[in-house]
Length: 70
Image (tube, rainbow, N blue to C red; front, side, top):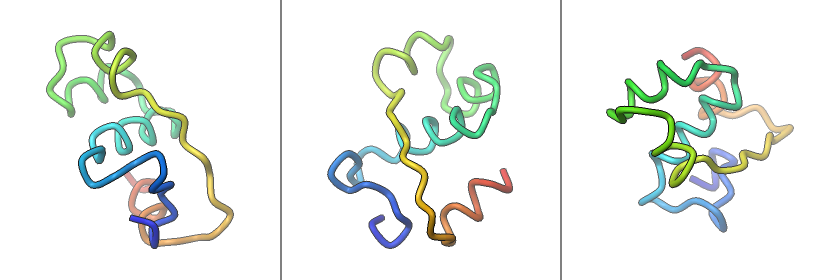
């Protein structure tokens, strides 16, 4: 995860759902799509438990390339 420029002080292997959905939100993906993909019935679950601050790295890497093409 660190090699993909993910802040491992904030995210661990157990937090891929919050990392991926927070990154999707930051990239501008609408909440209906995010909640449907995560299997949540509404955005409240995301806002309460999973919405994390995502820091943008200046280094281009594989993880950013994948997420930017979703």
